[in-house]
Image 1 (cartoon, rainbow, N blue to C red):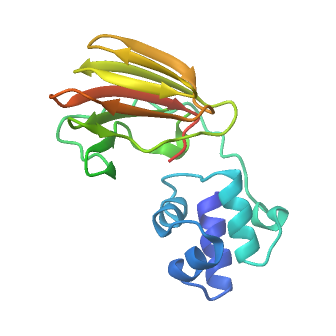
Image 2 (cartoon, rainbow, N blue to C red):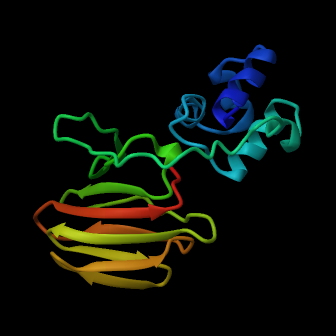
Length: 186
């Protein structure tokens, strides 16, 4: 059984809606839905909050889960007509996920778009997370901890994603960036 199926099973056993579980756990409805639909696994922190909201301990939440190690997946090709999931940081920054079946992936490739005078929200991923960015178009400033890096088209940056970071476009043209984050977290 996968975590999404187990979560749904426990939620329904407790006669809770996604809204109820979200309010009680503090985990966003969209995140709970993605976990239940096996589009993401969530974080340990979200699992702890969910378990507490369901009045179970973490061991019970993880009961009967298995690491579905299967034979190697064939390469996944995203074609231009393939629909992609898009998310908005705010009215000036958004991203598109460049692959599907995220639960089977070890990295998350995205296209980040930042409009002029826009910036992403500040992020800080768990310890051990890494991030790589490659500037396709425009100029972006990457703020990582107390440092900042001005990057132009065809520049790249690889860094420890557990350090607080965000990206800003101080220019007059939109910025387009390929970003790869590992492990997969939304």
